Image (cartoon, rainbow over all chains, first blue to last red; front, side, top):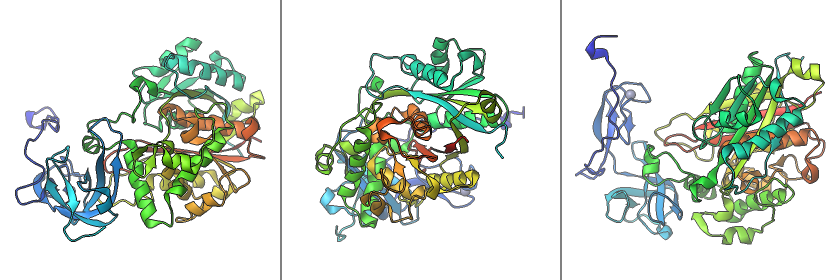
Length: 134
Length: 384
Ligand SMILES: [Zn+2]
């Protein structure tokens, strides 16, 4: 493996991406494996399912359901309190995200949708879908 | 017939867990290491290999400790596996003996969390969930929230885990907390990550523990007694991009299945269990994962007193991580010392009567897409 083209290089995965996580059409900026179709967020560089390395940027659905959630009162990362939840997206992917709603409006399996928000320390998060009740 | 290379824990020691700001890593661990050698009836020159589990000790922690005892010229292996680091070191020692690399191994587990000045355990910032604000209490709090949603359980059932832990710990002179608490006190303590309150979270602290393991051949030659490692299982978590049932963490289920299969005995044969109760909810989830009851029955198991003295099996007689304390890398080894004391009738006021078989269980870490990074389960039985 001495020819130039075979020399492995690292992935510049901390180089940063200033573009918002929420796409202009309200989806989630993630990745999709071009071989097996597996979605990823954040966008993967090696597909954990098939190990293909061709993963293109893709828009993931901005809707899902709130599997569980907690309001955090102690954290070295952001000012407290803030609320986190695991969201199961409609295409099956699960992610951790900020949940931007008072506790009284939350319950497990609540339908939620993705938003950009200055209220979130990450600039984005999920809110209850209009009409969904706790 | 026990193989000549089977491994047994022959000696063990730990220091009192707590806030020991005036102690270095070697200051914490050297007394435990020396105590374990003495307890095993061996000298430093008998040690053929050293395994040291820690998460935050920095480079060459094991060597810094054993040089204080004059131990050198043998392989010293340092192990990080988050909260499972100490138990992983025990696992490597068992393997080293079973594979014939040495006849006597010293295992040390140590960590000093007061170096961080309090707060939650520092996590690795490269992880996307950490960048989104995850902290260890939040991982377990979300598990608790889902548990309360799916089960016939109330926050009082979570608090009851702390009440039991503190009651057990009150009889343990090595515990960081040696006082009992009520359900009301637990629920009224300050919120950490809803529904978990402060008294439902293991405390920040420092500690160390050490054990000496021997091959069966060496043990018989010396006529030493202790407990045989009937199973030593280490698993990593399996990445899952989608749905994971947080009430059925696969890593602990699979580790337990493999451990019982290797040992040839099951959960119904256990007298003592030391499990990973870093937060109250963990104990309820792990009753089921370790097969102490059927899935869905953990709340009833606790309510009916079946996991304390007088019940089916005593879970966390030490007070567990909630009461004894949880200096990450030390905990897996401290669990082994605790069950050694029970299986050799030396546990004092908290002795579990006629204890023949024990299980220790510790997981490690939170990583995006995994239940946990590591899980170690050991099964022990008295040497004949
Ligand atoms: Zn793929």
